[in-house]
Length: 413
Length: 77
Image (cartoon, rainbow over all chains, first blue to last red; front, side, top):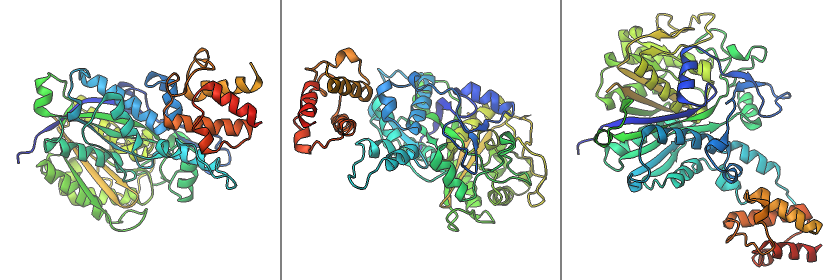
């Protein structure tokens, strides 16, 4: 069976750097940090009191008042980015065959805030939960509700692999269209982890930064003094479309999704394999899947979360995958600006990769102050300032707790 | 309007996101106010909480309009 080609014809996002694609891109290029004190809940008793929050999000732009109450924030973010992507793609919802359009979404956790609120309201003497507790909280409801809004009756499910969730969704979307099972897939991911459970839970793991005196420099991937990731939130959505289908309707094409790789560390619950074995395999397999050689790659949007261990393992894997070519790559961790969107990370970072390719600009890794002797400084991490560079092939790495790795390959058409 | 009726209507306006003028005594939760089966269960639970009473499932099933809800709660108090 001949595999079909798949392209991106629509994009949308709400994230800590902006509530539209162009606002996000402008702030990424300019090296703006999305971090600040937590406003979403009273964090005064929490170890970490800051995060990368979405600013001025207006759910009424995307859904009815009645829906807002029934949808967890992670679903609201999915609605916002999906609406933008559908509009951007220019598809005529009246004419499109909804049976041939699917939704494959990514969410690492789902309705964490809903879970917290409902369990807090639980009374042992008369145990009853809201009928919306389960359907509002489950990690797959965002993708389900989005399909209802647009009448997309094609394949529909949600991938859950912690911080690799959205990338797994995008790879599955690619493969579904490649095999002819759908003409279009709405894909991406959303997460809403800036809440008491999210902050306290990751604090207990010593996974997030505690640099309360200077939130804007707290996310500092590959810097010697990094002390954990910064919690982010939001969503990005894409319309993936079969190439001939896109051409036939005269669609604007951002890039081709050339391939994807998936692997596991098989090492530890939360720590990465110190030698980056799983990370090496996932990049190798992603390139093989795309039919590309390591030398074809120009840019890597790395996982680079600003955690002590992860930021050492990933460069090792890059050196192993790319050999001498590793030193010619442009590399950046846009988490230095957006914070870590957990299950939505692969979506906003895939979007950053596509926009970098479109405009020939590598967004920076901000907050670099002190080199880490354990990280090969000959690698070009695009520290502190964006760089002009033509990009023909970009890859986006995401690694999740549980040892899940996923890499997506984007190619200029 | 009785105190109970006012509270019942306020809960319906909040939970179903409808306009207060739509919440007439005769209005049916499902047919007139756009509630689905989950909304209806939630409404009953809110009434129980607001008025500190228990509405058993077999009685809850008989409450389908605003007026029936008010009447049930007033008789139970």
